Amino acid sequence: MQTSKLPKDFFFGAAMSGPQTEGAWRRFGKIDSLWDTWSNEKIEDFFNRVGSYAGNDFTNRHNEDFALLKSLGLTTWRTSIQWSRLMDEDGLLNPEGAKYYHDLFADAHEAGLETFVNLYHFDMPTYLFRRGGWESREVIEAYANFARTAFGEFGQEIKYWFTFNEPVVEPQNRYTNGGWYPFHRDFAQACRIQYGISLAHSLGVEAFRELKADGTIRSDAKIGLINCFTPPYTKENPSEADLEAVRMTDGVDNRWWLDLVTKGSLPQDVIDTLSARGIDLPVRPGDEQILAQGVVDWLGFNYYHPARVQAPEKSEDEFGNPVFAQEYVWPDAVMNESRGWEIYPKGIYDFAMTMKHDYPDLEWYVSENGIGIEGEDASKDENGTIQDDYRIDFVGQHLKWIAKAIEDGAKCRGYHYWAVIDNWSWNNAFKNRYGFVEVDLMDGYSRHLKKSAEWLRQVATTHEVA
Ligand code: BG6
Image (cartoon, rainbow, N blue to C red; front, side, top):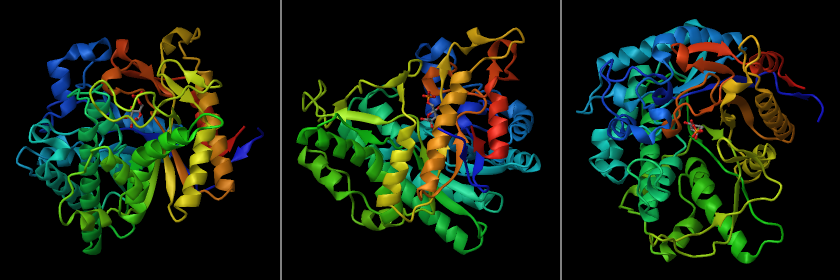
C-alpha cells in the first residue's frame, strides 16, 4: 500500500484505565474493587503474582507521563474514574477521591491534553458485587447515582464521556468462560449481567441528558459507549448453520450494543433465539422506557481481532449452557502468539463499512487498538532500546485501513492506541507489553521510549502513514 493520509482534524491519543494505571491502592479514600479482592484472595492467579495494587505507578508519575504523551504528538487521552475511588460504601461522594481526579484532569489540561472520561472499566466495587452485582436493581441504581455524581462533579471540566468500556467482557470473562473472578460458567447469568449493564448504561445516559439540560454539564459535552466490536466471519461456502453461528455471535457481541446506542432497544431476533433456548432476560415493567434512553452521541470502537465462528459441534457445553457458535481457525490467520489473538487489520475496515451501512448516522472513533507482546526485553539494542518493529507494522496497517474507511465514507474521527505506556493488564498483569513506552519494573517503574515511539511521533504529527 502507498502512503495513506488521515484527515487534519483526526485526533491521536492514548487509551488507559484507572484500575490499570493508578495504583494508589487504599489511598485517597479508595475502597476495594473486585480486582483488589481477587488480588488479596488469590495472588497466584496473577502473572508473576503482580496484583492490582500499583498499576503502572501513574499516580506518582502522571505529570511525566502527560509530558511523554505530548512529546509523542498526541493531543487526547482516555482514562476511567474508579467507582471505588470516587464513591464510598454509603453511595456518597468521597471528597478525597474527587480531589484526586480534579487534580489529575487539571494537570492533563495544563499539559495540553484533552481528557476523555469513561465511568466503568470492569471495576465493580466489591461491596456492590456482594449485593448482587449487575443482576441487582440496587446496584444498577447505584451505578446511576455514581454516574450522576461524576457528571455533577466534573461536568464543567470534561467534554467527552463514556458510560462503559467493553460491556461484553464482564459477562464473557466472569460468567461465560469463567476466567475471571467469580469464575462462573453460566451463560444465562452472563445474559442477565449483559442486560443489567444495558439498563445501567441507559440510566447513565438519562442522567447525562438531564444534567446537560440544566447546565451542570457543559453544553458541548458528548456521551458515548465503548465496546470491543468483533467483525464476524465464517468459513468459505458456509452452511445455514454456520451463518446462524455468525448471526448469534454478531447479535450478542455487536448488534446488542449498536442497537441499544442508536435505537434505544435490543435486537429482537437475538432475544427470541435466547428465549427459544430457555434464556429469558429479567425484564420488568418500565425497562423498555429505560433502554430507550440509551441512545448516545457517538461511539468508541475497540479493535484487536475479528471473530471467526462456525456451527457448533454440540448444542450444549459440559455445564448445560446452550452453545450457539464455536471458534473456527482461519487457515490464513496471522496470530499474535503472546496474546492468542488473530491479527487482521482489514477487520477494522469491514466493521467500519458495516457501521456505515447499518448505522449511518453514528459517529465513532477507534478507542483502543494495539499489540501486546511477551518478552520484549530480549530485543533491546546496545542502548537498551526495545526493537519493536512489529508494533510499527501492526499500527501502520490498521491506520491504513482506517484511512481507507474514511475515504469510503466511514464517520471515524480519531484513534487511541492501547496502551501508549505499558500498564498492568488484569490477570495477565505485565505479561504482554503494549506500550510505545516501556515501563521497567526492575527500575522503579521508570519509563523508556521503544524504537516505535519515534515512528508514532511522525505519524501523529504529520497524519501520514507510509
Ligand atoms: C481491552 C481492555 O479488552 O483490551 C483493556 O479494554 C485491556 O483493559 C486490553 O488491557 C488488552 O487486553 P489484555 O487482556 O491483553 O490486557
